[in-house]
Length: 225
Image (cartoon, rainbow, N blue to C red; front, side, top):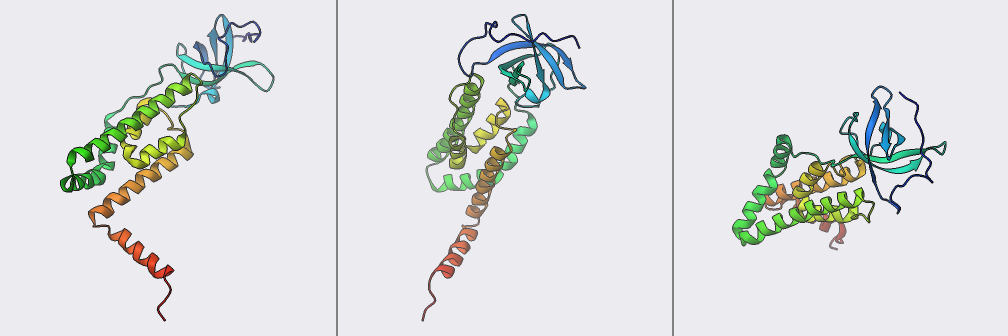
């Protein structure tokens, strides 16, 4: 790999302001060592595989990436928080198949619920919450790219908990957002598991919840004298 000319931070003409991401192209990449070089305004800026925020795409020469300027332990300018430009994913067939499987029990429960209530209200709530969830992920991804104030993870989880998890599921795969955060994914899949449980129990006339309620009352109510 050619010698790297580290830019002088005082001489670069990068846009000012905290959190602004810059755009550059990878001009060198050593796949074996997992490191390469960006070319930004005639400056050569080093980057490493660990500098990428997500690792779903193998870096290659010619890739356009977005990054923030930072410094390594030696005080040299480096690229940080790197991600591929227009880093959108694709909702593939197996994603839809996975969602279809996950929606089987909740979908049938909603069908039963719509038969007893105004189906337009039921369908409208489900589609509305999923749309809100999808848009919140899009907004959070956009704000992350430009270093703006992020959508709170608690808000994303709240929308999923209220019923917008199908939209959140698709948004995570379409925007490739929040998929690499283990703690976030753990909470998200716990929410999906909760919806599966509630759907199955609803179809069983709340058998499990009735039993739990009875057991709770027996454990907390004083025994008759």
